[in-house]
Length: 274
Ligand code: ADP
Image (cartoon, rainbow, N blue to C red; front, top):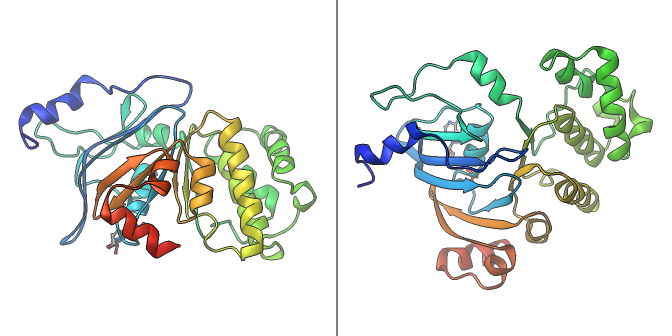
């Protein structure tokens, strides 16, 4: 029945997600291939509005691909991805992905922010320019409005004194704090975190994790996080999804997944990362 017309017809009737201030995320039978490599196989999962979910699983299992699909850095080969009550891509009547409507994608992209493993700051711009670039260019704020907006964020991440510094003058931890502030400066409703502390020196990891934990607790952002760090996943998430070979193997509250996993693949994975 998975391939029946009834199954795909549900996508035309509207998303079942609740409508809070933050939208939820819904993957419906999402397929993603790279050549012959089928990375996601009719993947279904939901992140409720305001929920904080961590994806764990072996390297190469498709976790980053999920985040990149949500950022529209990749396009699915099938299925529908919803953010709130709107699909990212439109399906035509034959069930194929309709050509991207740039205006719609632009609107959808504004809702989603991402923090990357490698920070991805603009190296030729100082901290202030890094932060105001998006609000000015993408959201159309005036420079003064943007500066106003980002001052509070810089204060929150503890870098007000680095406003004129260039990324190369900052530690990895400071660069990642700037990247977090930059993502938040766009006032996203969904925040994606992709292995955000993997590139940091060990002594800088906890500070960045504590900052993100506080942001997660104090905001109503919908959060989707990929991490290998179990205590961070415990701190930051309501629910953990164990992911392997393009499918969810097991899911539950962090205490259950890390404390009493039921699936052998989860046990093996947790053993391997300890
Ligand atoms: P994870 O984040 O779980 O480590 P990824 O989503 O990065 O996994 O990768 C899933 C699979 O997709 C891997 O086999 C990877 O080689 C492949 N893949 C990811 N991006 C590309 C790409 N741009 N071109 C070809 N293959 C890719």
